Length: 291
Image (cartoon, rainbow, N blue to C red; front, side):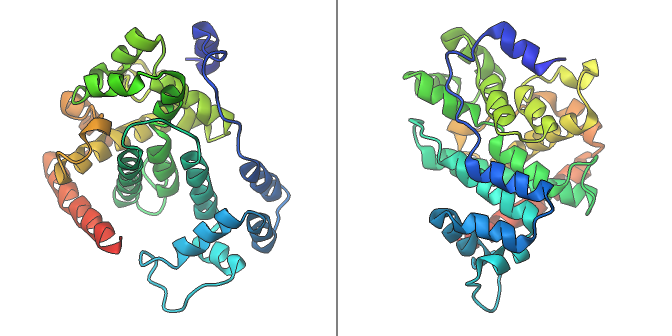
């Protein structure tokens, strides 16, 4: 299954504006390839005042519970770790893409919630090494970017909000709604953005096919891609169990209609699922208290 061949076949590159990869992400990648120290990478981040402020705000948040306030960017990067720092900057860069999406705060809150639950699932079910090779950082990044294509479609099509409202509560039909109304869909657009920003290939592929349950049967993608997709469907389901009416406009889980297949892939039982509900409720309640 060739992602770029499909992109060329549908010929949408000329009609949807794909934001270029942020310079800071390119600079960090180049620095890492040259085995730069954390201090050198912190110096790169320090050149952007807004990014520096977010990194410091994050490490000093109640989530990390540090007794002493961190004022040094170098120390903040060291405490967060390079992977978390890079993911934080990538997520912030995504939020900076202009959009006309209705209730954008709800969209970002929902995406952040799904990202947090996905990270929890990967670690809870897979331990330190992650689930099927997917660690919590990668699961979190995928959760944040999975629906980024909606941002791009909202830029291109003035009536895209109407499309989302029409498809509310019927996640399995959203892609078809989009194709009928706009001749493309958010999964394809999101895959384009992920590829342009040089996210891991399996994240790009998972974004592209996250609505296509058939990939669990045809053997066309890797187990890591399937794991990302399955984790995300489970995260959407668990989030909806926690607050069933809050995020409906942006909820698109295919868990209920594909529950047996997804549970078999993840090798979980009904008892495991009930346990996860309890654990995720505790997680979300904890995160809510930190706000």
